[in-house]
Length: 280
Ligand SMILES: [Zn+2]
Figure 1 (cartoon, rainbow, N blue to C red):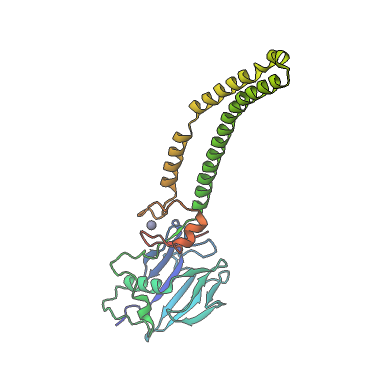
Figure 2 (tube, rainbow, N blue to C red):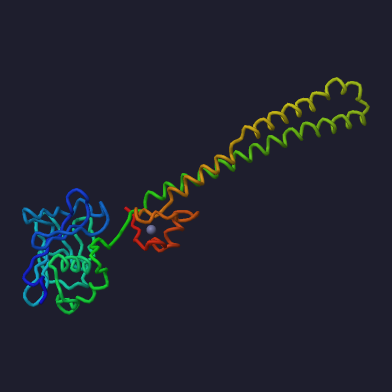
């Protein structure tokens, strides 16, 4: 029969790594990503037998969740509890930040720690809900990764692209300035001749083409010195290296699209490794 019967499952924050620690009979396993559990969840100290909450399983497989410290808070289906019978389908949240635990996964993890041998699961009628998590011995399967930092990475990339385009625009305007002086010079000369002021105008009209010539050289020089193409390459390369799935086992580039669009496009899930994206 179920090895969890008559056992107690301790649940709390893992000291150090900050994952959710599940403990049965002194054996422990961590669930979730590093630092996924907020500080408002009390630590699970196995040696001292203390944790944020515990689930006791009676001989019939019924589970009772108990808040272990008075300074903690524990919620079941949105209501604060001191002790309450729970089903795997219930929503359990720990701490004032209401950290929602993946209860079926916690139960599944506890079963592995209790080295259960039959595959039918004996935890009451709802235990089949916990059976779809992987059973290959890799207990930390609820992979959640914070993607909030990607917003700054995208914004940084985007502002560099805009700055580069503005620089190109300025160079374009400077180039047309030289044209303006050159064409303007001939136009004024023609006009001055037409009005019979050719003699006087001759003394001054040379100025415009000369200024145009100088501006033309400045704009040429700035275009030669312009590193926009190289900058664009470096910026794009940096972006493709940084705008990636935060799962260290994946790290795939998430595409050239704004952060907000990326979130909705992928429904908060990596399209490659299927890890869950969270924002903190
Ligand atoms: Zn991924």
